[in-house]
Length: 255
Image (spheres, rainbow, N blue to C red):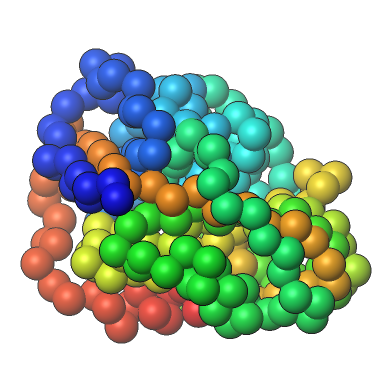
């Protein structure tokens, strides 16, 4: 049994960090900082992709949803369009890994979000470890959202998502990508499941709010290392009040 290694919080410049090893979630900043409206980018997409080929996040000024799949990064904009992210683009929050699945599974027909959670929990029962999840398939329905680029002074994330654009897709093929995080990362990442979607033709996607599968194939990578890098040169992060319990805000934003 592999020992859980929770890396010490690292205060360092992104360019000075070594590439994260396998079985590692690399994360920049925290979910509570994002909830508090800390949207200034502090790590380039180019540097982020040195830490993994799979993951999710957002972009500077909260400019859309991020999907990193097979080493290619996509930006799902608030108008529903999808672009390949520029290497020079910056992120205020993201989590990535080098995806090397250890478990394969066949989602049940007509599985929804809750059913997939239950299935992954059965095949990967240790919820005290991180788990990267990818599902490729055809979906009867896919319900996503994105977030529009914000202007300073940045509002809290719950105010942004209260007016979020939502997208409803039917009979669409694509990939689900994201993580199941342990409950003890509350305030740092999203406890439980946080999933994004990108269509196979790379024209639609976003943060998943709900779905119903037709058929597909799933894979999971169990990750027992966590590397957190905080922005040490950002005044906005330094001045943020991160002492509050933002659980209710997070639940409203995610669901």
